Image (cartoon, rainbow, N blue to C red; front, side, top):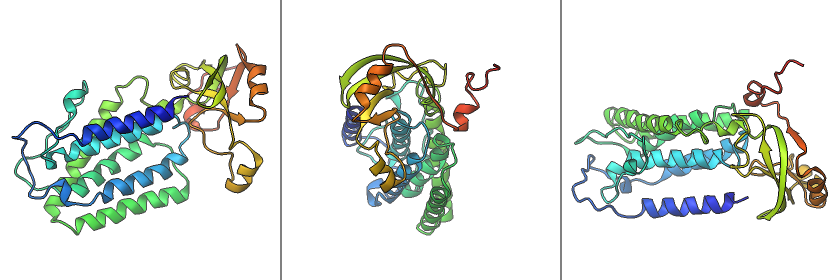
Length: 291
């Protein structure tokens, strides 16, 4: 499974893109204050919150979690690029992406703009209700930053910044839904599979899987959903953490038994992965079939 290499490459490409100065000298600066005049608090706080929300979101690994983070990061960048005169928009690099224009000659409070992007997009990407403690932290962050940023600028600038961040966040979200493979991919780690061939990869001896439930897990092979051994699948981890560990969406099995398990079920065995998650149960034709 190549998810770690993919995430590293994506991160490097994003950093190169974001920190490469633009060529235009006539980009308008619509605010007396630039993005660089403010700390990165909103982005850092929301990314930390993302880790807590994503941790409990069923089906978000390996692909949907980094995909959602990438789209929110893109939206935050596009929402603030007007206040970064040495940088260019990436809008023209992506077919079908239409970013609303910021108003010229008016002030924006850039932390509020970023905060509004994440406030708008996070619930769109994460529709499952998180544990009570996470929901409380989520709501507390929204309220805390709302109050703080409203006190740092005028009501007019604050409202304008909220509206613009929400508009950009919605635009990027709408664009993301046009992706036939990525959109709502969190709904497809469960269901009925046929086991495929074995291979040696990042996680050692592994087994490829082909999902049989259309629009639920049928893209499993492309997402690199495979069976592999993992050191965190043991009783000690359960005793210490309360669960067996966190794979990136793959069915992980104990390292000591993984070769025996894989060799027993490889090459055409039916494998069924069940979850009471309503996103799966409500859509599965197998679960809801009349027998």
